[in-house]
Amino acid sequence: MWIQRTIAPRLAQLAAQRPALVLTGARQTGKTALLRHQFPEHTFVSLDLPSAAREAETDPASFLSRYPPPVVVDEVQYAPGLFRHVKASIDADRGTNGRFILTGSQRFGLMHAVSDSLAGRVAVLELETLSVAEIRSVAPAASLETILLRGGYPELWAEPTLDARAFYNAYIATWLERDLRTLLRVASLRDFERFLRACALRSGQLLNQSDLARDVGVSGSTAREWLNALVATGVVALLEPWFRNQTKSLTKTPKLYFCDTGLLAALINLDPSTPQALHESPLRGGLFETAAYCELRRALGLRDELASLSFYRDRDTEVDFVLHRAGRFELTECRWTEHPDRQDARGLHKAAERLGEDTIARRTIVCRTPHAFPLEPGLMAAPLETLSGAR
Image (cartoon, rainbow, N blue to C red; front, side, top):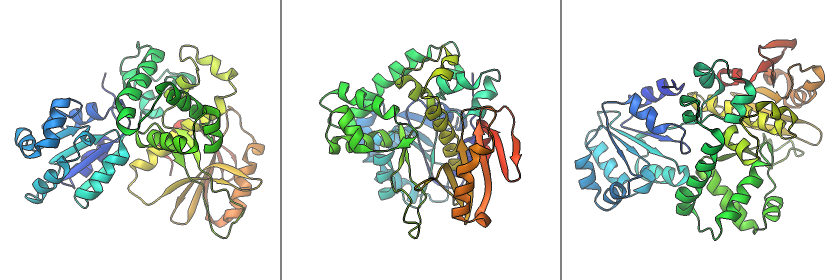
């Protein structure tokens, strides 16, 4: 089953405007399938194959003669030596766009090579897992609980009979073996898996790296290195707080979020085959807030505009998400309820007062309601999927 991706029109637009396009994203988010579907006329080669990666790295000229543009090169981070030859090929024919489509699942190393060799020649997009709206396009009867626990990896919805628990067990094991060993020197994969699960228990919370390191039994420097690897491979993300120098009481500590709720649920041992059990879990609020973060992150990645996502926290007030655009703020609070009330909006109103009422464009409580409705003038209650198109 083919799942139409919201990012596809933006992908086509950028490929028509730049000689090269880089599509990043964690493993299994559907990069390969999307590019094969979107660019069927392009030659396709994957550097996951050791022989192809070796040729691309050691003899890039021969590699490009074997796979001339237009070409899709998958997992290009395995051959950083290829980028200089791609640059030379682009410079020899700057009038033709969309010649090189490159993908990678290790963002930091990939983007370093891109910025060194392809600056001014390349557009960059990140592919996330499926949004709630994309899932509902192929599974309209799926409950919110099922969506949260099963997560957004496309294969799980293209093949609905797949065992989600087995999928995530294999995903974790494969990712640990394939990607982690290329990024880190880890003496014990078991220790790293414990670290990964400890991070999962903190999704949606302020990040305290000292506590995290102590709970796992590793040094602070090791915890920082491992956390950077999780960010580099698109497994987790850090959300920075909104901060103005004159507001001294605001926190400077980021919040930690997983980039997919299904992987998060698997790591905290929530069973996707029993979705109603989510209602009894003390971790349901963090899972729901993580889902909201993922929706906002996807939406922001698709917009061709200057905007930033953060959170607000001071001595007595917190707002889960602050979207800042051209001096205006959209404030969003998450609540695991179908029927929020005005009391749920206290943090929104306090933050609006401190940021300046005239700067507030929207206040929203995201909850489990099936349909958006106004709670009071200027305050909406809305379902999760509205975030992917919120403006």
